[in-house]
Image (spheres, rainbow, N blue to C red):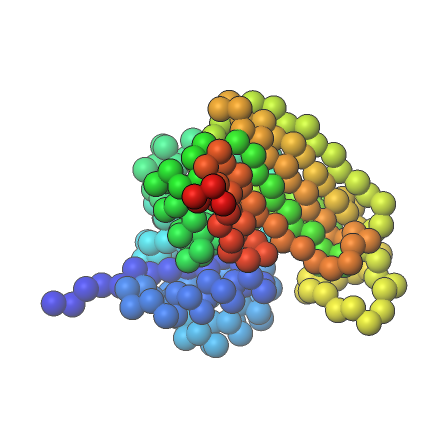
Length: 289
Protein backbone atom coordinates (compact mmCIF):
# COMPACT_ATOMS: atom_id res chain seq x y z
CA UNK A 1 0.00 0.00 0.00
CA UNK A 2 1.40 3.41 -0.97
CA UNK A 3 0.81 6.05 1.70
CA UNK A 4 1.02 9.62 0.45
CA UNK A 5 3.43 11.87 2.29
CA UNK A 6 2.32 15.08 3.99
CA UNK A 7 3.65 18.01 1.95
CA UNK A 8 5.33 20.68 4.07
CA UNK A 9 6.04 24.33 3.34
CA UNK A 10 8.70 26.37 5.17
CA UNK A 11 8.03 30.11 5.44
CA UNK A 12 11.21 32.03 6.27
CA UNK A 13 14.57 30.34 5.71
CA UNK A 14 16.80 32.22 8.16
CA UNK A 15 19.02 30.42 10.67
CA UNK A 16 16.24 28.80 12.76
CA UNK A 17 14.71 27.16 9.68
CA UNK A 18 17.66 24.75 9.52
CA UNK A 19 16.32 22.91 12.58
CA UNK A 20 12.95 22.46 10.84
CA UNK A 21 14.40 21.47 7.47
CA UNK A 22 16.80 18.87 8.91
CA UNK A 23 14.11 17.40 11.16
CA UNK A 24 11.50 17.12 8.40
CA UNK A 25 14.15 15.51 6.21
CA UNK A 26 14.50 12.67 8.75
CA UNK A 27 10.76 11.91 8.85
CA UNK A 28 9.43 9.23 6.53
CA UNK A 29 5.85 10.51 6.39
CA UNK A 30 6.58 14.01 5.12
CA UNK A 31 7.91 15.67 1.99
CA UNK A 32 9.65 19.06 1.97
CA UNK A 33 7.55 20.53 -0.83
CA UNK A 34 7.86 24.34 -0.74
CA UNK A 35 9.98 27.15 0.70
CA UNK A 36 9.36 30.88 0.90
CA UNK A 37 11.59 33.80 1.80
CA UNK A 38 11.58 37.52 1.01
CA UNK A 39 15.16 36.94 -0.14
CA UNK A 40 14.61 34.95 -3.35
CA UNK A 41 18.26 33.91 -3.71
CA UNK A 42 18.28 32.50 -0.19
CA UNK A 43 15.04 30.61 -0.84
CA UNK A 44 16.49 29.13 -4.07
CA UNK A 45 19.65 28.10 -2.23
CA UNK A 46 17.69 26.25 0.49
CA UNK A 47 15.46 24.61 -2.13
CA UNK A 48 18.52 23.32 -3.96
CA UNK A 49 20.16 22.13 -0.72
CA UNK A 50 17.09 20.15 0.40
CA UNK A 51 15.68 19.12 -2.99
CA UNK A 52 12.52 21.22 -2.63
CA UNK A 53 10.47 21.67 -5.80
CA UNK A 54 8.47 24.86 -5.16
CA UNK A 55 10.04 28.24 -4.31
CA UNK A 56 8.20 31.45 -3.39
CA UNK A 57 9.00 34.98 -2.21
CA UNK A 58 5.39 35.74 -1.15
CA UNK A 59 3.94 33.52 1.57
CA UNK A 60 0.40 34.08 0.21
CA UNK A 61 1.34 32.29 -3.00
CA UNK A 62 2.72 29.34 -1.03
CA UNK A 63 -0.49 29.16 1.02
CA UNK A 64 -2.57 29.25 -2.18
CA UNK A 65 -0.94 25.98 -3.31
CA UNK A 66 -3.50 23.27 -2.41
CA UNK A 67 -0.78 20.59 -2.29
CA UNK A 68 0.78 22.13 0.85
CA UNK A 69 -0.87 20.59 3.91
CA UNK A 70 1.18 22.10 6.73
CA UNK A 71 3.70 24.89 7.24
CA UNK A 72 6.53 25.85 9.56
CA UNK A 73 6.64 29.60 10.21
CA UNK A 74 10.22 30.74 10.83
CA UNK A 75 9.88 34.46 10.19
CA UNK A 76 10.33 37.61 12.30
CA UNK A 77 8.11 37.69 15.40
CA UNK A 78 6.03 40.61 14.09
CA UNK A 79 4.72 38.42 11.24
CA UNK A 80 3.88 35.28 13.26
CA UNK A 81 0.25 36.24 13.92
CA UNK A 82 -0.52 37.43 10.40
CA UNK A 83 1.01 34.39 8.68
CA UNK A 84 -0.37 31.88 11.21
CA UNK A 85 -3.93 33.19 10.76
CA UNK A 86 -3.59 33.24 6.96
CA UNK A 87 -2.21 29.67 6.96
CA UNK A 88 -5.01 28.35 9.17
CA UNK A 89 -7.63 30.01 6.97
CA UNK A 90 -5.95 28.51 3.92
CA UNK A 91 -6.58 25.08 5.47
CA UNK A 92 -3.01 24.37 6.61
CA UNK A 93 -1.78 22.95 9.90
CA UNK A 94 0.80 25.27 11.52
CA UNK A 95 4.03 24.87 13.48
CA UNK A 96 5.06 28.40 14.43
CA UNK A 97 8.40 29.30 15.98
CA UNK A 98 8.31 30.76 19.46
CA UNK A 99 7.21 33.27 20.54
CA UNK A 100 3.67 32.74 19.25
CA UNK A 101 3.34 36.51 18.66
CA UNK A 102 4.08 39.88 20.28
CA UNK A 103 0.86 40.75 22.13
CA UNK A 104 -2.07 39.18 23.96
CA UNK A 105 -4.42 40.65 21.32
CA UNK A 106 -2.53 38.83 18.53
CA UNK A 107 -2.61 35.59 20.57
CA UNK A 108 -6.38 35.83 20.96
CA UNK A 109 -6.81 36.41 17.21
CA UNK A 110 -4.73 33.28 16.48
CA UNK A 111 -6.76 31.29 19.01
CA UNK A 112 -9.97 32.40 17.32
CA UNK A 113 -8.63 31.31 13.90
CA UNK A 114 -7.75 27.87 15.33
CA UNK A 115 -11.28 27.46 16.69
CA UNK A 116 -12.80 28.74 13.45
CA UNK A 117 -10.83 26.41 11.16
CA UNK A 118 -10.37 23.30 13.32
CA UNK A 119 -6.75 23.08 12.15
CA UNK A 120 -3.83 22.27 14.45
CA UNK A 121 -1.45 25.03 15.50
CA UNK A 122 1.54 24.33 17.71
CA UNK A 123 4.23 26.66 19.03
CA UNK A 124 7.85 25.46 18.89
CA UNK A 125 8.28 24.94 22.63
CA UNK A 126 10.70 22.05 22.16
CA UNK A 127 11.81 21.90 25.80
CA UNK A 128 8.59 20.15 26.84
CA UNK A 129 9.71 17.13 24.83
CA UNK A 130 13.18 16.70 26.38
CA UNK A 131 13.63 13.21 27.84
CA UNK A 132 14.35 14.78 31.25
CA UNK A 133 11.29 17.04 31.08
CA UNK A 134 9.05 14.07 30.29
CA UNK A 135 10.64 12.09 33.15
CA UNK A 136 10.05 14.93 35.63
CA UNK A 137 6.45 15.28 34.36
CA UNK A 138 5.87 11.60 35.18
CA UNK A 139 7.25 12.09 38.72
CA UNK A 140 5.04 15.15 39.25
CA UNK A 141 1.92 13.51 37.77
CA UNK A 142 2.44 10.54 40.10
CA UNK A 143 2.54 12.83 43.13
CA UNK A 144 6.24 12.34 43.94
CA UNK A 145 6.72 16.06 44.67
CA UNK A 146 3.30 16.59 46.23
CA UNK A 147 1.79 20.04 45.83
CA UNK A 148 4.13 22.35 43.90
CA UNK A 149 3.94 25.77 45.51
CA UNK A 150 7.14 27.52 44.36
CA UNK A 151 9.25 27.49 41.18
CA UNK A 152 12.22 29.38 39.71
CA UNK A 153 13.12 29.85 36.03
CA UNK A 154 16.23 31.68 34.81
CA UNK A 155 17.89 32.09 31.44
CA UNK A 156 20.79 34.48 32.02
CA UNK A 157 23.39 35.37 29.41
CA UNK A 158 26.37 37.48 30.46
CA UNK A 159 26.91 38.55 26.83
CA UNK A 160 24.48 37.41 24.18
CA UNK A 161 22.34 40.06 22.56
CA UNK A 162 22.07 38.70 18.98
CA UNK A 163 21.44 42.22 17.63
CA UNK A 164 19.85 42.73 14.21
CA UNK A 165 16.11 42.05 14.13
CA UNK A 166 16.29 40.52 17.65
CA UNK A 167 17.22 43.98 18.98
CA UNK A 168 14.54 45.78 16.96
CA UNK A 169 11.47 46.18 19.20
CA UNK A 170 9.10 46.47 16.23
CA UNK A 171 10.16 43.18 14.63
CA UNK A 172 10.98 41.13 17.73
CA UNK A 173 8.38 42.45 20.18
CA UNK A 174 10.94 42.49 23.00
CA UNK A 175 14.33 41.27 24.18
CA UNK A 176 15.49 38.28 26.24
CA UNK A 177 12.09 37.56 27.80
CA UNK A 178 10.27 37.02 24.50
CA UNK A 179 13.30 35.36 22.87
CA UNK A 180 15.00 32.96 25.33
CA UNK A 181 12.82 33.47 28.41
CA UNK A 182 9.72 31.94 26.82
CA UNK A 183 11.44 28.53 26.69
CA UNK A 184 12.10 28.21 30.44
CA UNK A 185 8.83 29.97 31.29
CA UNK A 186 6.76 27.59 29.17
CA UNK A 187 8.64 24.52 30.44
CA UNK A 188 8.21 25.34 34.12
CA UNK A 189 4.54 26.37 33.71
CA UNK A 190 3.87 23.08 31.88
CA UNK A 191 5.54 21.08 34.68
CA UNK A 192 3.55 23.01 37.31
CA UNK A 193 0.36 21.76 35.64
CA UNK A 194 -0.38 24.99 33.72
CA UNK A 195 -2.03 26.85 36.65
CA UNK A 196 -3.94 30.06 35.91
CA UNK A 197 -1.98 33.25 36.70
CA UNK A 198 -3.76 35.89 38.78
CA UNK A 199 -1.04 38.55 39.16
CA UNK A 200 2.31 39.47 37.66
CA UNK A 201 4.80 42.01 39.01
CA UNK A 202 7.61 42.56 36.50
CA UNK A 203 10.57 44.78 35.74
CA UNK A 204 12.69 45.45 32.67
CA UNK A 205 16.09 47.14 32.56
CA UNK A 206 18.05 48.82 29.76
CA UNK A 207 21.42 49.49 31.38
CA UNK A 208 24.13 47.81 29.33
CA UNK A 209 23.08 47.84 25.67
CA UNK A 210 24.60 45.21 23.41
CA UNK A 211 28.20 45.70 24.71
CA UNK A 212 29.57 45.22 21.19
CA UNK A 213 32.94 46.61 22.37
CA UNK A 214 33.64 43.51 24.52
CA UNK A 215 36.53 41.45 23.13
CA UNK A 216 37.56 37.80 23.50
CA UNK A 217 34.02 36.55 24.14
CA UNK A 218 32.04 35.29 21.17
CA UNK A 219 28.26 35.11 20.98
CA UNK A 220 25.54 34.32 18.45
CA UNK A 221 24.83 37.21 16.07
CA UNK A 222 21.79 37.71 13.85
CA UNK A 223 22.43 37.69 10.10
CA UNK A 224 21.61 41.41 10.04
CA UNK A 225 23.69 42.26 13.15
CA UNK A 226 24.33 45.98 13.58
CA UNK A 227 26.21 47.12 16.73
CA UNK A 228 24.44 50.49 16.60
CA UNK A 229 20.94 49.05 16.82
CA UNK A 230 19.45 47.99 20.15
CA UNK A 231 15.94 48.92 21.27
CA UNK A 232 15.16 46.06 23.66
CA UNK A 233 15.76 45.37 27.35
CA UNK A 234 18.95 43.77 28.75
CA UNK A 235 17.15 42.09 31.62
CA UNK A 236 13.60 41.24 32.65
CA UNK A 237 12.30 39.67 35.84
CA UNK A 238 8.89 38.87 37.28
CA UNK A 239 7.03 37.29 40.16
CA UNK A 240 3.95 35.42 38.96
CA UNK A 241 1.21 34.32 41.36
CA UNK A 242 -1.27 31.60 40.42
CA UNK A 243 -4.88 30.85 41.33
CA UNK A 244 -3.81 27.77 43.32
CA UNK A 245 -1.52 29.89 45.53
CA UNK A 246 1.74 28.81 43.86
CA UNK A 247 4.31 31.40 42.78
CA UNK A 248 6.99 31.52 40.09
CA UNK A 249 10.09 33.70 40.01
CA UNK A 250 11.58 34.28 36.53
CA UNK A 251 14.58 36.29 35.32
CA UNK A 252 16.23 36.45 31.91
CA UNK A 253 18.99 38.51 30.32
CA UNK A 254 20.75 39.10 27.03
CA UNK A 255 23.59 40.80 28.86
CA UNK A 256 24.46 40.99 32.57
CA UNK A 257 27.60 41.46 34.68
CA UNK A 258 27.52 37.82 35.76
CA UNK A 259 30.31 35.27 36.16
CA UNK A 260 28.83 32.92 33.55
CA UNK A 261 25.70 32.05 31.57
CA UNK A 262 23.11 30.35 33.71
CA UNK A 263 19.94 28.36 33.01
CA UNK A 264 17.81 27.35 35.98
CA UNK A 265 14.57 25.38 36.16
CA UNK A 266 13.59 24.41 39.71
CA UNK A 267 10.30 23.28 41.24
CA UNK A 268 9.54 22.82 44.94
CA UNK A 269 6.68 20.79 46.40
CA UNK A 270 5.63 19.70 49.88
CA UNK A 271 6.87 16.15 49.21
CA UNK A 272 10.05 16.93 47.27
CA UNK A 273 11.87 19.21 44.89
CA UNK A 274 13.43 18.89 41.45
CA UNK A 275 16.06 20.75 39.44
CA UNK A 276 15.81 20.20 35.69
CA UNK A 277 18.53 22.72 34.84
CA UNK A 278 21.52 22.95 35.07
CA UNK A 279 21.30 19.18 35.68
CA UNK A 280 18.59 16.75 36.73
CA UNK A 281 18.40 16.33 40.53
CA UNK A 282 15.52 15.10 42.66
CA UNK A 283 15.44 16.02 46.36
CA UNK A 284 13.19 14.36 48.91
CA UNK A 285 13.06 12.95 52.44
CA UNK A 286 13.27 9.21 53.07
CA UNK A 287 13.52 7.49 56.45
CA UNK A 288 14.04 10.73 58.39
CA UNK A 289 16.94 11.62 56.04
